[in-house]
Image (tube, rainbow, N blue to C red; front, top):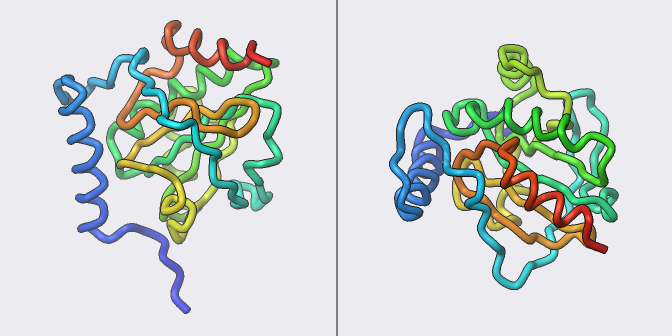
Length: 188
């Protein structure tokens, strides 16, 4: 049985097209260095329960999403070949530092790539990510979530419900976005 380690070119094009379409529909231009303004975290209709998953991180440790109940969780679906994913990764790390000590966790779900590819990429980032990166090598988890392209990020409340979804790149350390997340952290 052959393991899928990377997306085929047509799937990459499809996911990138979804991300670009989402940006265009939001009324933003798409430029090489632009991201969608931080305040554009869209409320998820019905606030569905987040599908649980168990995925290995870069050290081979298993991470189960449901074990993070009681904390606000940012779940980011991304890939190294995705330019907006690459641009937003340092801001996710800065957000992690800004909310250190709060009831907040980050899980970056890499889609269909291998450890060597991700490790090489993260070594080029400043700051280098310290939050957990987990691997959805066969894209099974991706298919259970309402992902509309890469990157897609979800903010879960303490009960594990999806409160916000962001399609396309963001500056996650923006004060307005941090205030939205802090509002969930401070809620019962």
